[in-house]
Length: 69
Image: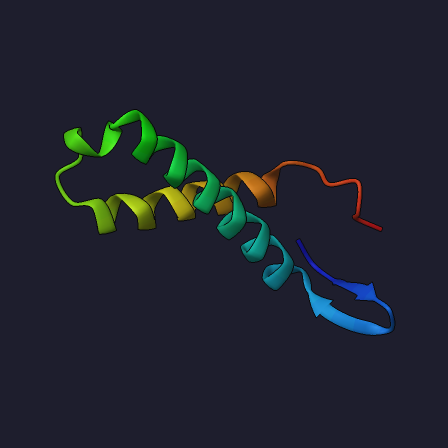
């Protein structure tokens, strides 16, 4: 993703926008995994959460977005 997004005249880096989307998805998925009880099988929850965020960020960057110019 190269470029920026213009929101009301404010230019935001595409890296920042994709990271915020991935972070929001990470929060939702973490809450769902916590309710299901999946963290009982995870050795290191903080490391798992970091890996989950990185994977979601990669997915957000590779999936085509309707907001791209």
